[in-house]
Image 1 (cartoon, helix red, strand yellow):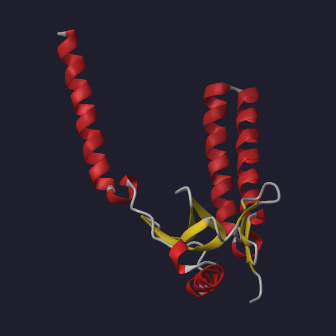
Image 2 (tube, one colour):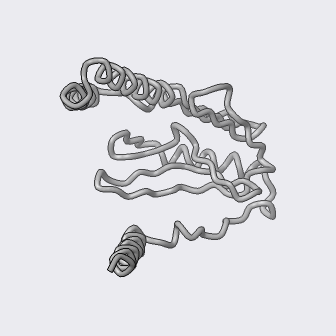
Length: 189
């Protein structure tokens, strides 16, 4: 089988609407910062924002995943990347994240010690659709199945955060905040 390569620069293409939104954000931030902080602090704040956004875009464009005989190599845009051998990988699945902007799918691996790692540039979302995502994911799974024994593959147990819904977390936090406020008022009075 041929080595597979998924690169961020092939997937993520900042568009004019992205730059327009960034420009508007900088104008609003600059206006508030100038009004509240002055010229020098405003310049530092805008420079810091541009640097962070530039770093984020650079990392996204430089990220990549390679699948080959040695295993899966992941690089998030800094350094040479980290190779996880096939013997370390216990499970490969797709993580689905739903938000108000749509559904995002990301391929990920689970290692022998239970840690999970997303595979950069092997993702699908409304903003960056990948019509070949399922085919590419299946090609990665085929490599994994070819290079590991079936006894070494097992689906990890669900974590607590996978079982809690955002509504349940909001309810719990709301109750905790209410209890803290009630206790604070009772302690003062």
